[in-house]
Length: 333
Ligand code: PBG
Image (cartoon, rainbow, N blue to C red; front, side):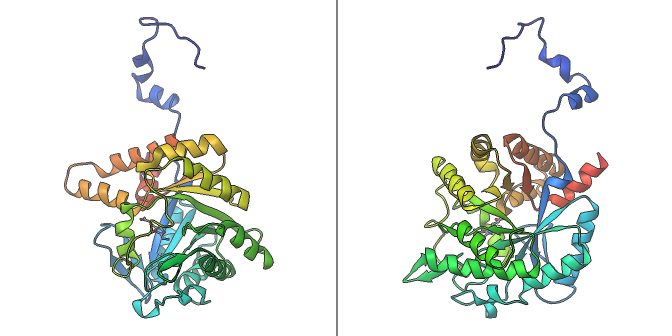
């Protein structure tokens, strides 16, 4: 309990707000570039920088360009990146087989980044949606995303990415039992040091729209993902998801999207006291970016405020497409 405080006028809360230095002195939460994770979209080819119309300021890079941009981001203080491939349509199949190929885009990029920017942590997404022609995160059997068949596929995808040198695997698929299964698969090949970051509380959100454009799965996706991603009307099951993932061996957990789910971030952090991450998703980025372009909001200010809010809610680290902008702002501050 908070002890009782002296009433006004002995207490004047404005006393600590009167100077910048004093406000800084008593500030409880701060942002630092080392806790920002930059999601990077990849495409085939060379020297490619392709705009993504629904995410102004974000581009897809071919591997050669990605390496240069990631090195730059690292100099700004960003310590970890997350890779998302745009797989050409002719490589998308019902079983997502491209996800298991040793030299696919993500694995090629992982090796190139490890070689050229060795200090940066590499996070690879585990889910089949970039690779399936139906755009679902798992395998479809008899018209439904089949849990256990999908988990087997995710094990194969995980091993493929671990062999390429991924430091962290981040299952974003929301199949039941996948954390334990992936941990088992990794351990059979002595990848016991590979970290598992579980998208534990991932909601069936309409804020993912621009991301699906970015990886080119929008037109493929038939139906929705509500049979595996969480119902936005629920909070208790987020704690249940996290409890299971921790029992299964997750090292860190994530909430996604971030801003509409700040209560969930706080609940998880207070309940489990484990590294809790937030993903400020594509739709959140687009919302702020388009408002800034329209002149309704000031980009730097609203980005900083939105990320600081996520820290205050309990996030230890944050995925954000604005990671580089914010890192350079923080380095100037
Ligand atoms: C898919 C995946 C999605 C995102 C990250 N991994 C989209 C989805 O579930 O459809 C969304 C990220 C974003 O919107 O920024 N496994």
